[in-house]
Image (tube, rainbow, N blue to C red):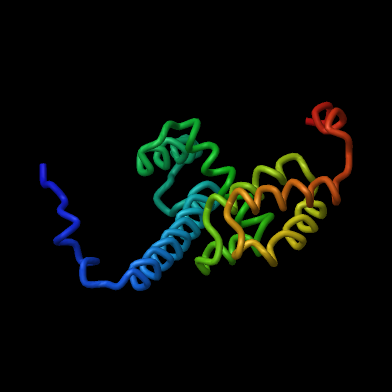
Length: 164
């Protein structure tokens, strides 16, 4: 196995500021890839490919996604759900992810918060929290989302559990 020698990496000649900027660019690139993956997964789940002959073939899409992403089929189900929510119910969140302005961790926080809520409520929450999302860590964003949910959907916790 090759040892990676940081003294020989391509980043040796960079200044500290250039290394930090490179980290930012890598994070943005990862976010753009996450958005592309979400769109592809949603397409696979909802638009039959021309070579899928039968409904039986379509049932294997989740397993194909699991295999390609090297995750369990149950995890693939979650990935498919998140992708569908981003593409269909949270288009502004998807756009920020695709632009590399937020991370997938940010997006998933909003997807999770919107589970079980109507489209109108989810849209209102999204509109409330996205303006500051690019400047927040995922943990800070999660707190903003929680506050927005409480303000926009002020049902009691007990009622929310009963509704779920």
